[in-house]
Image 1 (cartoon, rainbow, N blue to C red):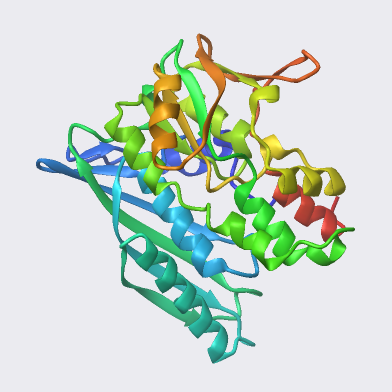
Image 2 (image 1 turned 120 degrees about the vertical axis):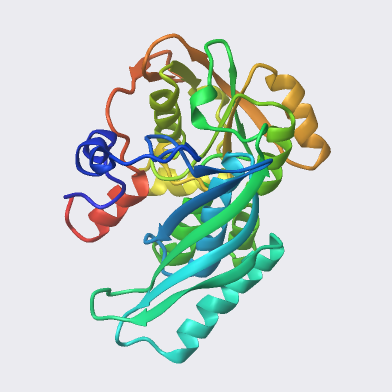
Length: 331
C-alpha cells in the first residue's frame, strides 16, 4: 500500500464501516472530511481529535501540537489539553526525547494548552520518532462548526497560503538538495504560521458555514473531503490561490504541485460573506483569499490558469508522499 492517508473509499470500506455502535451524546461521529468528534457536554461541547506526525524528521514536536490543535480550530473549538504518544527507535538518545518534549511544551504553551498526559516508549517497531497527539477542546454548543455545512453559492477562502508545513519540511530536511540556500530565519517564518487557531475562532464567531484544516492532499484534497462531507461540488480557481514565493520555487525545483501539498497553517473556510470575513481577519493580521465557490454537484473541480477544467473525482495523494517515494527510489 502507498504511504499517506487512506483514500476515502478505503477508509469507508476498512475503517468507518466497522463502527456500528453510536451514542446519542456524540453529536458528530467519525466520518469523511470531519476534523473532530463532537460530544454533548450540556451548554458546551467537547471536541476530540488525534493526529500523528510521520513525514518530518526535525521539529516533530512543534508540528504535532499545531496539527492536532488546528483540527479543533476547524470546528470552532478552543484547545484545552493535549495527550502525547511518543514512539522512539532503539538507537534514540535521551537528548532527543527531551528536545521533542521541549518543542511540544513550547508549542502548547504558545496556544495556552496543557500537556495532560500520554505515553512514551522505545520500540523496535519504528525507524524514526513518531509523535501522535490527541487534542481536546471546547466550544459553545450553538457555535461549533463542521465540514457538513457548506452550501452552494458560498465563497471558499483560505488563509495565508498553500504549502506552509511542507515548505518547512522540505527546506529543513532536504535543503542540501536545493540549488539555493534557505536560511533558518526563512524556515522559522513558515513554522511560525503553522497555527490556525486564531482564524478558526474568529471565523466561528463570524458564523461561517464550514471549515477544514488543509493537511494531506493540500487544498485540492481538503476541498474534496469537504465536498464529500457536505454533499456539494466546488470550483477552485488556480490563479487566485496564494502560493508563497519560497513554496513556489521549491515546488518548481522538485516538480511538485503546490495545490496538492501538505498545508497545515492554512485554514479552508466556507462562508456566504467572504469579503466581509477577509476584512475581519485582516484586523488581527491574518491574510485571507477567496479561491473558489461551492457549487451544486458531488465533487470539486480545479479551474487551471490555462482555462482547463480538471474534475477531482478520486482520492488526492499528497505531493510530499510522492516526493518521499521518489527519494527512496520507489517511483
